[in-house]
Length: 122
Image 1 (cartoon, helix red, strand yellow):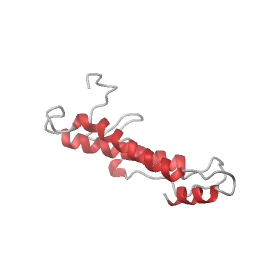
Image 2 (cartoon, helix red, strand yellow; image 1 turned 90 degrees about the horizontal axis):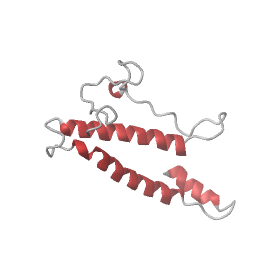
Image 3 (spheres, one colour; image 1 turned 60 degrees about the vertical axis):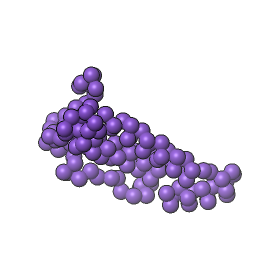
Image 4 (cartoon, one colour; image 1 turned 30 degrees about the vertical axis):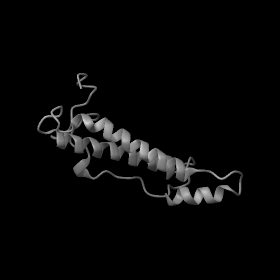
Protein backbone atom coordinates (compact mmCIF):
# COMPACT_ATOMS: atom_id res chain seq x y z
CA UNK A 1 0.00 0.00 0.00
CA UNK A 2 2.94 2.31 0.72
CA UNK A 3 4.19 1.92 -2.85
CA UNK A 4 0.72 2.73 -4.23
CA UNK A 5 0.55 5.80 -1.98
CA UNK A 6 4.01 6.91 -3.12
CA UNK A 7 3.09 6.36 -6.79
CA UNK A 8 -0.08 8.42 -6.34
CA UNK A 9 1.94 11.28 -4.83
CA UNK A 10 4.61 11.10 -7.58
CA UNK A 11 2.07 10.91 -10.42
CA UNK A 12 1.18 14.63 -10.25
CA UNK A 13 4.59 15.39 -11.77
CA UNK A 14 3.45 13.72 -14.99
CA UNK A 15 -0.22 14.64 -15.23
CA UNK A 16 -3.39 13.92 -13.28
CA UNK A 17 -2.94 12.19 -9.94
CA UNK A 18 -3.36 8.41 -10.13
CA UNK A 19 -5.67 6.56 -7.75
CA UNK A 20 -3.71 3.36 -7.10
CA UNK A 21 -4.55 3.31 -3.38
CA UNK A 22 -8.25 3.64 -4.14
CA UNK A 23 -8.25 0.88 -6.78
CA UNK A 24 -6.02 -1.48 -4.80
CA UNK A 25 -8.23 -1.06 -1.72
CA UNK A 26 -11.39 -1.61 -3.78
CA UNK A 27 -9.96 -4.66 -5.55
CA UNK A 28 -8.90 -6.17 -2.22
CA UNK A 29 -12.40 -5.65 -0.80
CA UNK A 30 -13.95 -7.22 -3.92
CA UNK A 31 -11.44 -10.11 -3.85
CA UNK A 32 -12.27 -10.86 -0.21
CA UNK A 33 -15.98 -11.09 -1.01
CA UNK A 34 -15.17 -13.33 -3.99
CA UNK A 35 -12.89 -15.66 -1.98
CA UNK A 36 -15.45 -16.06 0.80
CA UNK A 37 -18.21 -16.73 -1.71
CA UNK A 38 -16.04 -19.11 -3.76
CA UNK A 39 -15.07 -21.13 -0.68
CA UNK A 40 -18.50 -21.02 1.01
CA UNK A 41 -19.44 -24.33 -0.62
CA UNK A 42 -17.20 -25.94 2.01
CA UNK A 43 -18.82 -24.32 5.05
CA UNK A 44 -20.03 -26.94 7.54
CA UNK A 45 -23.74 -26.23 7.00
CA UNK A 46 -24.48 -29.63 5.57
CA UNK A 47 -23.10 -29.08 2.08
CA UNK A 48 -19.47 -29.67 3.04
CA UNK A 49 -20.00 -32.53 5.46
CA UNK A 50 -18.11 -32.96 8.71
CA UNK A 51 -14.78 -32.03 7.16
CA UNK A 52 -16.22 -28.95 5.44
CA UNK A 53 -14.61 -26.51 7.89
CA UNK A 54 -11.16 -27.83 7.08
CA UNK A 55 -11.86 -27.69 3.34
CA UNK A 56 -13.17 -24.12 3.74
CA UNK A 57 -9.97 -23.05 5.52
CA UNK A 58 -7.85 -24.82 2.89
CA UNK A 59 -9.78 -23.13 0.10
CA UNK A 60 -9.28 -19.69 1.70
CA UNK A 61 -5.57 -20.42 2.21
CA UNK A 62 -5.18 -21.36 -1.45
CA UNK A 63 -7.15 -18.31 -2.61
CA UNK A 64 -5.02 -16.06 -0.39
CA UNK A 65 -1.84 -17.59 -1.81
CA UNK A 66 -3.02 -16.91 -5.37
CA UNK A 67 -3.98 -13.33 -4.42
CA UNK A 68 -0.56 -12.78 -2.82
CA UNK A 69 1.12 -13.88 -6.04
CA UNK A 70 -1.17 -11.65 -8.10
CA UNK A 71 -0.41 -8.59 -5.96
CA UNK A 72 3.31 -9.32 -6.10
CA UNK A 73 3.24 -9.72 -9.87
CA UNK A 74 0.97 -6.74 -10.54
CA UNK A 75 2.24 -4.19 -8.04
CA UNK A 76 5.68 -5.18 -6.77
CA UNK A 77 7.53 -6.12 -9.95
CA UNK A 78 8.55 -4.13 -13.00
CA UNK A 79 8.03 -4.87 -16.68
CA UNK A 80 11.77 -4.60 -17.21
CA UNK A 81 13.53 -7.92 -16.76
CA UNK A 82 16.63 -6.10 -15.51
CA UNK A 83 14.93 -4.18 -12.68
CA UNK A 84 14.60 -6.31 -9.54
CA UNK A 85 11.19 -6.51 -7.84
CA UNK A 86 10.43 -4.28 -4.85
CA UNK A 87 10.12 -7.36 -2.64
CA UNK A 88 11.34 -10.92 -3.26
CA UNK A 89 8.94 -13.36 -4.87
CA UNK A 90 6.65 -14.92 -2.26
CA UNK A 91 7.61 -18.49 -1.45
CA UNK A 92 5.02 -20.94 -0.24
CA UNK A 93 6.18 -22.92 2.80
CA UNK A 94 6.93 -26.56 2.03
CA UNK A 95 4.21 -27.55 4.52
CA UNK A 96 1.71 -25.84 2.19
CA UNK A 97 3.34 -26.72 -1.13
CA UNK A 98 0.77 -28.93 -2.79
CA UNK A 99 3.06 -30.21 -5.51
CA UNK A 100 6.12 -31.09 -3.42
CA UNK A 101 5.31 -34.79 -3.25
CA UNK A 102 2.94 -35.32 -6.17
CA UNK A 103 3.64 -35.25 -9.84
CA UNK A 104 3.31 -32.03 -11.76
CA UNK A 105 -0.24 -30.71 -11.73
CA UNK A 106 -1.34 -33.10 -9.00
CA UNK A 107 -1.82 -32.29 -5.37
CA UNK A 108 -0.81 -34.42 -2.48
CA UNK A 109 -2.31 -33.20 0.79
CA UNK A 110 -4.93 -35.25 2.55
CA UNK A 111 -7.15 -32.29 3.43
CA UNK A 112 -7.52 -30.93 -0.05
CA UNK A 113 -11.00 -30.10 -1.29
CA UNK A 114 -11.92 -31.92 -4.49
CA UNK A 115 -11.44 -29.83 -7.61
CA UNK A 116 -14.59 -28.71 -9.36
CA UNK A 117 -12.86 -29.70 -12.60
CA UNK A 118 -12.53 -33.28 -11.38
CA UNK A 119 -15.97 -33.29 -9.79
CA UNK A 120 -18.41 -31.25 -11.90
CA UNK A 121 -21.27 -31.95 -9.48
CA UNK A 122 -19.79 -29.42 -7.02
